[in-house]
Amino acid sequence: MNFMLVGRGRGEAVSVPQPKPPQPRAAAGSFRLQAPAGRWLGVAGVLGLMCLAPGHLPAAAESAPPEALRLQRTWMPKANPSSFAVGFASGANFCFDPVRGNLIYAWQGDYLDLRPTVDGKNPGEPVLQGRIFHEDLTASGFRTGSQNAAPVIRFRGYRVQKDVPEFQYEVDGILVRETIRPGPGGVGLIRQFRIDTPDRAVSYQVRNAQGVSIDSGPAKWTDGRLLIPGNASVQFSVPVRP
Image 1 (cartoon, rainbow, N blue to C red):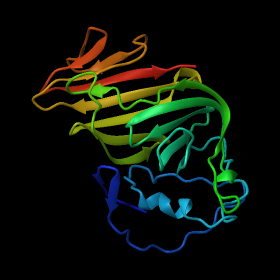
Image 2: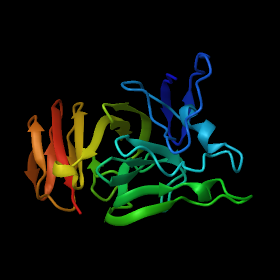
Image 3: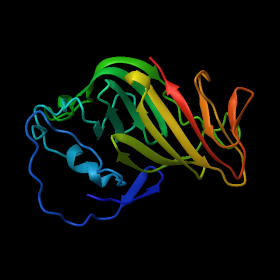
């Protein structure tokens, strides 16, 4: 299905998809939810899964072929509703919170056990199958003014290309494109950001600047922050290591 997303703060409106012929059900053990390559998806693309009646989720929903990207939009621990749980074949997994505009934690292991989300009358949170190696429960590291002022985040949508998810969101009205992929040798993750600034500067704060690379554009380090000048196009990468 192809959906276009229009962000409106926490509320999101999507256009109604065109009906398509019914698709065959996935065989047991092969369940996964993934955006069609190169297409943007919004909330409606995943509401069908989230609204399933108890017991309608395949018994093997927490498993997927090891070569497949696993992506669910669901309830996650310490996250806002409809956050993303993404798992790579390397065993690196992460939770992206669209309200915060941030990768809030990452873990190494066997993705999620989703059965608690549909078991019984009071569904619970999925269970992480592995060890958390990164956690940052704050909002996006981008700032357009004071470092102490919380940014205004507006989630715009996401897509998957070649098993790599890309998230689009605005920070104080400035569009950010972020892709997240496995790190070298499948260890950890690499977050890559692309941003086009208007006539004002933007900064990005990271916990650990080691390994951060400026891939293109006039960004530079200033007082422990990556400073991106106004009227610039910048791409930079941030490793997330165990």
